[in-house]
Amino acid sequence: MTFAPTPIPSRTQFVLEAIKHAILTARLQPGQALVETELAARFGVSKTPVREALKTLAGTGLVVMSQYKGATVRLVDAEMAREVYDVRLLLEPEALRRTITCRASLEAAQEALERADSAADKADRSLANRDFHRALYLSCGNPLLGRMLDEVRDQAALVSTVAWAADPSWEREAAEHREILRLALAADAAGAAAALHDHIASFLRRAFPAGEPAGPAARTEQAAAPDTWNAPRPVAAS
Image 1 (cartoon, rainbow, N blue to C red):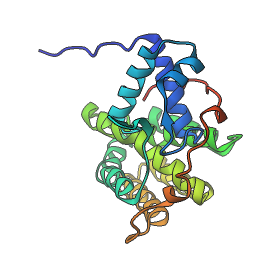
Image 2: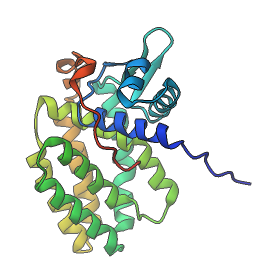
Image 3: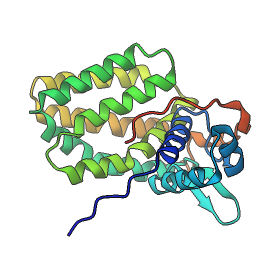
Image 4: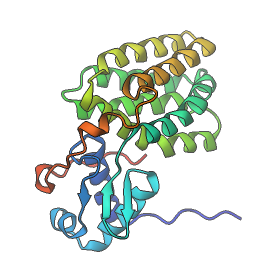
């Protein structure tokens, strides 16, 4: 017997998406404290939806809950990045291989790539890039595989956000995205999967070279003041 998940109340969902958007677009920095009373005042809600949103974000790996420090944005280091990207390397190319026959998914990837190319800022570019990768695996025919990749999707985006802050490399990654999509549209499943594997692996090597105890997070560890970010527009839940 299976049970449907309990829906998240709308206020909690709004707060959750707003905080997640701020984290994934670097308005909230790794290590920054997430104070319930301040967030509740910012969003005009009680502390309950804020607390529930932070618990959910902790479950996705974007927030760390500590008995002594409270909630903070997760810090990114080489160990964390390699764990997340190891999962992607194992699963994402195979999911793409299985998605090749779904034309609608490839068209969605094309649309996301075009949005990334025309993005007005790095926040919109980051969100479009996430949509590009998700379109390549979502129709793999195995819902469990899709959910597993969804579970690391936000953590991977956090790694990218931190790495981009230290070394903007989206132009190179955009070219790699175009090549992956070209191969996929040509129905070259093996070639597209290999290009995607190389794309993920090369990003990790550039951002977190082997042997470094910590990555670019060391340069972004200074938390921004809580009043330096504006409540962003909510984004679609992953």
